[in-house]
Length: 80
Image 1 (cartoon, rainbow, N blue to C red):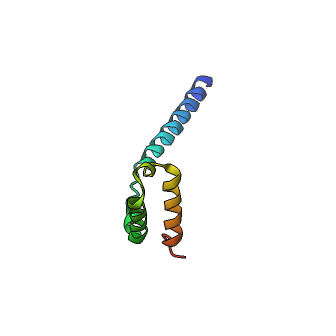
Image 2: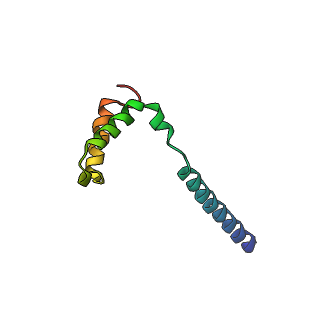
Image 3: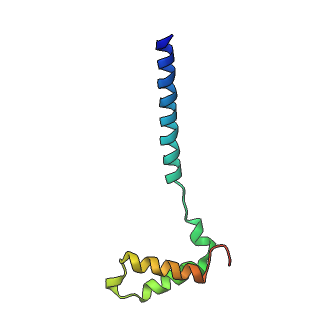
């Protein structure tokens, strides 16, 4: 009886771990490219501002985040 109870617990734990690992892989595979197509004015704003940056600032994460924030406030994805 104790052996079957332990086997059941191990089986439930294995199923839970498998489910968690499987769901995390599916969540990472979601393509969010449709968001760019939803708001072309926002994407154009980001591209235009990045095109005007000097080369030494193009890979700066803080500047990129500022551009995204500014364009997002100007052209919000779901209206104002």
